[in-house]
Length: 59
Image (cartoon, rainbow, N blue to C red; front, side, top):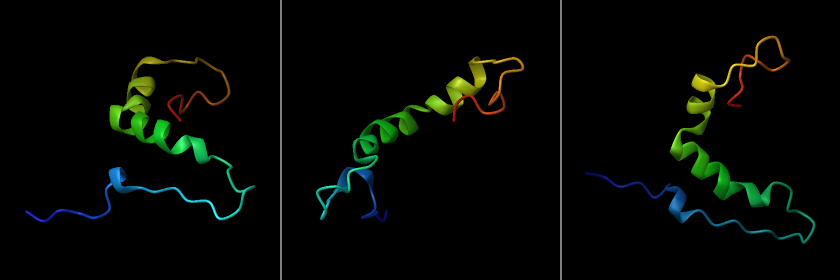
């Protein structure tokens, strides 16, 4: 079996500009949410009726 070198466990976030941190703190929480399947869980269980954005509550 071939292993991939493109795994999230090997992800390094490096900033070469002290002001370039927009969304920098979201990498780990979004990775966890994706692995847990939170988008699918929310889509299956949250119903917003006629509210704006009701088509994709998990997004």
